Length: 196
Image 1 (cartoon, rainbow, N blue to C red):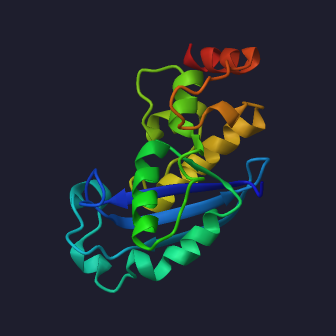
Image 2 (cartoon, rainbow, N blue to C red):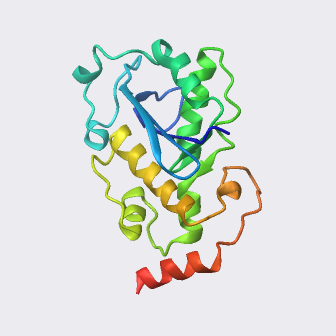
């Protein structure tokens, strides 16, 4: 395993193939949690960009952007040999798998990756597990929220936070009915003391 590929997508809606990716970022993270590389791009969808009020992307901004098919093989290579991670991996994974399938590319490793949302639900005090709230809880700065690169970098730092504290992320994948490891006692105590 070459480390992690943290992904974030901004989309024109909630369900592919009707909705499409309009921005994507991939951040490489090594096994110790350090960021080692990043890649991001706007993506020109076939139809509209969707909710500009959410992601801030307008139709004019994507006019000269590449289509997913123009960069898909490069993206596929950036994920290869790495554990894919995202905050709400199920959402990002369904778009990536759908878009790669349009190109005839298989991507079975994506859905079996690590979900920092799921990890946070197990390890952090609630009630909210939005990326911004999780970052605030553990003292991570989130800049450019709802931009693909801003969210991917914040997710990479959140992943690094867990890795540096020895959290076993192997059971945090989006697999149905997967057994989930209990957090180590000192990790739980750290979060309880922050919440006081």
